Length: 150
Image (cartoon, rainbow, N blue to C red; front, side, top):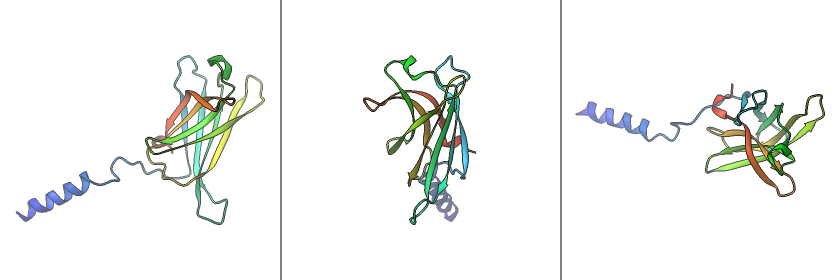
């Protein structure tokens, strides 16, 4: 009887644990962003995720994205740029502008956001088309999950 109670307690604590399903990401880490639109095999990116201490308060999490060989934003319609987009499903999201650097063969797009206080477990990282006039995001071009961050 005592063994059954112990087994039930152990199983109950495992099944009801809020940490189940959460990824523990060791920082600093990086994650390769892969294309989600077919026909753009050369389009790639990387997200660097790490802790920064820029103010006297506690450290924050920084996400920076570097993306190369992206198609021209206007080739998808009324878009004029790209934004980094990170989110935890049904909880919170962060957007930040990616800036082009002029290079032969097309720009490299890069940007960062340094003020994240949430735990990024199970978050998604994306590069999306952006319309600066309306402030609206367009389709996702590159994507990854924080769970792949190494």
